[in-house]
Length: 247
Ligand SMILES: Cc1cc2nc3c(=O)[nH]c(=O)nc-3n(C[C@H](O)[C@H](O)[C@H](O)COP(=O)(O)OP(=O)(O)OC[C@H]3O[C@@H](n4cnc5c(N)ncnc54)[C@H](O)[C@@H]3O)c2cc1C
Image 1 (tube, rainbow, N blue to C red):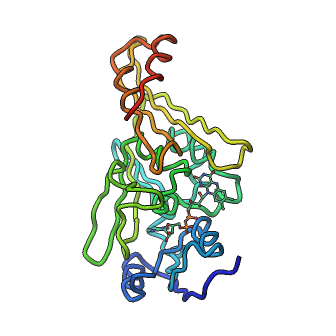
Image 2: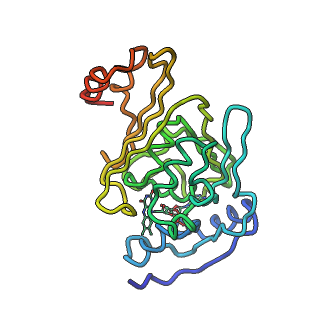
Image 3: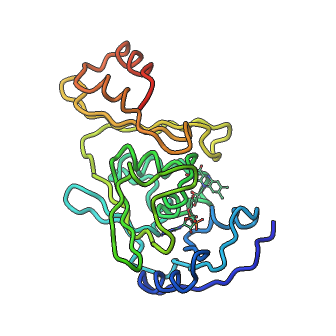
């Protein structure tokens, strides 16, 4: 339970963090809330040579509405999102992450960069059709949620890049829910399902469904979505749609 030796630096800005990561080389890693990285280091699953702490970078915190979408700084904590009705599914699912202690430290950027299929926010980002903005020494790029999660604990974020912002469409007028199945309320999801539905006159205009921990990456249940889109929302139809396999 004792991590391997590592160096530690505090970044004062995103550019500073990028510079420190570049100097630190292949084994330098950003540190956000530390609630996934530090346990991994203690178990020796990870042994970074340098941790670049992002906690002083004020630009990486905060939630902003920009017309039809939300822009959320990577260092915004789960606690800052939980229970925010204006954030819809994101606010509701953030409140289901672990317990309050974890939510007080863990960040949205850390959760998405970690890329754990058992984490709650990756499937939510996928269902929302969101994206992340990352910046490195060769510039800035935006990665769609569908391209972000490449495998178990593996994302499209390159070594030396910093996730700066999470973007999600507001999807006003959608109903939503996140059902997390676990043995104790504060545990990781054994499995989880989130859904967003827009109806008009009892007909499903649009539906988006994300699946947590049903594979090594979060999934969109696209076959179920297709079976429901444009259909009247009746119980038997929902049951039939849920039996569709594949995505
Ligand atoms: C007891 C416990 C229970 C938990 N239960 C749940 C749960 O039920 N659901 C759930 O979703 N999560 C759960 N978590 C995880 C928690 O949500 C973490 O906070 C989260 O996964 C990682 O966020 P962090 O800010 O702590 O990141 P860190 O641990 O600091 O970093 C995680 C990884 O992301 C990288 N990283 C972090 N920030 C950036 C960035 N801005 N740019 C590039 N790379 C970055 C780091 O280098 C590291 O590789 C739990 C954690 C604990 C300790």
